[in-house]
Image 1 (cartoon, rainbow, N blue to C red):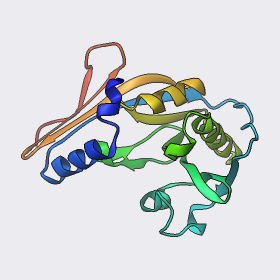
Image 2: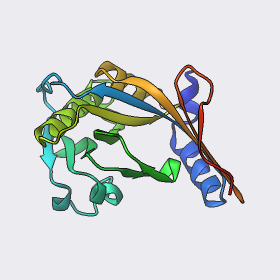
Image 3: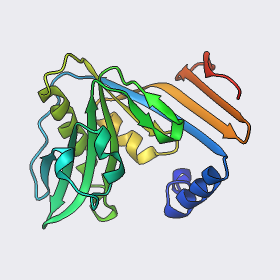
Length: 200
């Protein structure tokens, strides 16, 4: 059994949320980056992709809590049902809940990638990420890279981003217990090099 399955499920998510509510948070995210050159066109198949203005979506959208921070929403539909989505924000910082702070991607930020369980394993995640890259390019903002933050145990998302040309560059850590916070950032493959926030 793949070890990531022990942490990437609804039970582990509820446990994480319960601990977080008690003031105990441990987050380890990897920053995946790629040049924002022209990505391959998203391939066409039975799943249709649609680009949405976040202001046009209502509270029934899966990531409605994040729509105010997104520039574009790309959603996938099959037989009229939404089966996946991804958000992209260009040229702005985005508050990242697991890190409890804003994150500046220095370009485009691809986030909240989701594929419904019944549609996984068919390349839909890769199509959505490619479409997000196209959406970032079409803003004509002066940016040259795209970044995504992926939890260290989220192996399926890591595979998706690597398949689309992203490389893991940094690891960001956040630890919080009552009365204490610690943040660190390091290039992957090296020892921690910088503490970006001290104790509280």
